[in-house]
Length: 351
Image 1 (cartoon, one colour):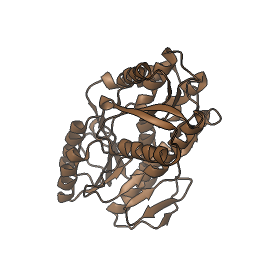
Image 2: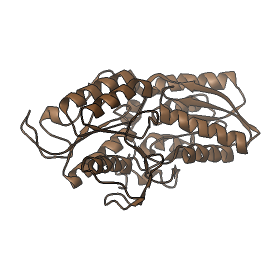
Image 3: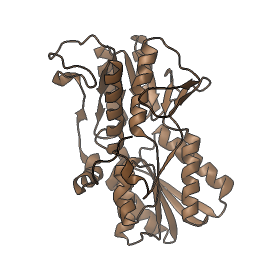
Image 4: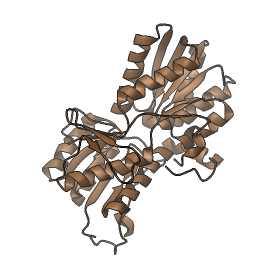
């Protein structure tokens, strides 16, 4: 990972708070005559290279921008074209439209971070019928026909680790609330499930009082949900933001109520997203992983499957610092262990 070049600006924080209000769809690469990660081409001409596409849950936030950066780096290293294309709001219907467009373009492989498997599963099958390799990354659809899943860390490790870290902050007792993104997002729901299991098994004096959801992972909705939870439960000890996009809203709600240090805030947020709140003392820690490395792994995996190569049980990949493991039973490529972001290392990352 590269060192962060500078501190987070107020402009970036404002963008994080308002991305959910934006509309439209942003596509990458070929429309401008330049294939991301590949060579510039004349508009409308095919470069002849393998085309790997990734559909994030939304664009415009540091986390997925880091995945895009890693994907571009992998595409340049591996000599393929990379199409990063998504909507500015987390919207399953938009993912379906983008998938349909990529199928018509005849790309070689499509990877997607699933928002709602019931919406996208039929299009995974449609793409496969057209001869396109389809797999998931960042958020899985295990009930689909996807070929494999590129995972940042195991859902169990992510859920249990967050619960352990929050429990330590609140003295292993008290009421906590959860504010999540879309209610259909499989990765978010899986993390929440493991948070609940860890609480039930290890922390009998901690109570999860409510789980709230936001449309499109909106920071503004997350702020309102956090405010409502603190109003309803005046003795609330902790808030969990289960999505990088909801962290600014949850943290600002605690800050505005003057409850920094009284209500602990933790979540799954990129370093740039959580830095202002760690600096101000609203947050102590965030649970994360190397999003740029995940983007690199996503493209590398697509190239492997297009070229008909099998994954090894342990894969040493140039461009990724740590070994990547393969679970044949679950068809999962695992990037590594969860990363704890805190005041000691928040400035070490540029996403």
